[in-house]
Image (cartoon, rainbow, N blue to C red; front, side, top):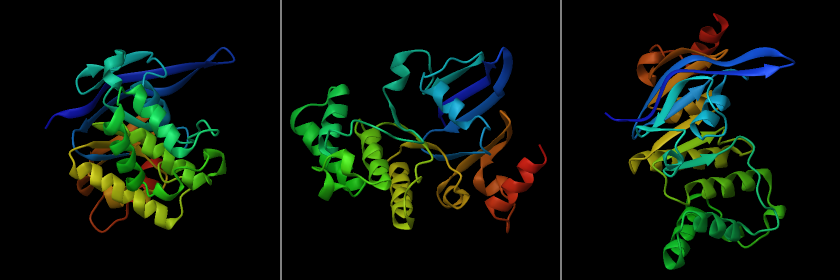
Amino acid sequence: MDNAIEIRTLSVVFSSNGRPITALDSLNLCVPSGQVFGFIGPNGAGKTTTMHVLLGFIAATAGEARIFNTDVNKSIARQRIGYLPEHPDTYKFLTGRELLVMAGRLFLIRGKQLSDRIDEVLSLVNMQNVSNRKIATYSRGMMQRICLAQALINDPDLVILDEPTGGLDPIGRMEVRRIITDLRARGKTVFFSSHELSEVELVCDHLAILSKGRLIVQGPTSKVVPQGESLEKYFMKAVSNQ
């Protein structure tokens, strides 16, 4: 099986008041293509830092990361990615539909193809009825949905989601699970972090647990979590030993 993401001995060190802070410490990670991969860990474990390296937002101090066998330092590596940040924000003076028009044009999608794609992603996130409202009037959950639609506008092969169910009610979380499983059924790779471990357990084929910038464990969910034990219970034991 090919890998959507390959990370080898990746380290990120920041400076704070002249002192080095290690955010990632020789991380090795492989994310198989066409799978849903849960990337979990306590606050400050390095999950978002890892995502930001993959997205080209920050540079690694050492090691390398590749997306579909392309170095993340090359801009072409990001053409096949859709990304939803933990705290999505956008141009509130636009309507939801106008935001998607702008996002689609950035990917050189035009005309009927863009119109059809916008209708498709709006339906996917259940925002058809409010797409002509100003984003400034959206609730936090609605903002999460429209930004998820924006992340999917280019029909990406790899979808990176940082806390995708944040701000959503139980129905919204269920819809996000449906979207994730639909993406997998279409052969897409979903790489996401979440503190909602029950959500991870329900949808993930593979998972990795990170703590203090180091990988604790990775593998198929069914093999990582002992039979008869919940992911939450296993997670608490795993991180408490670090």
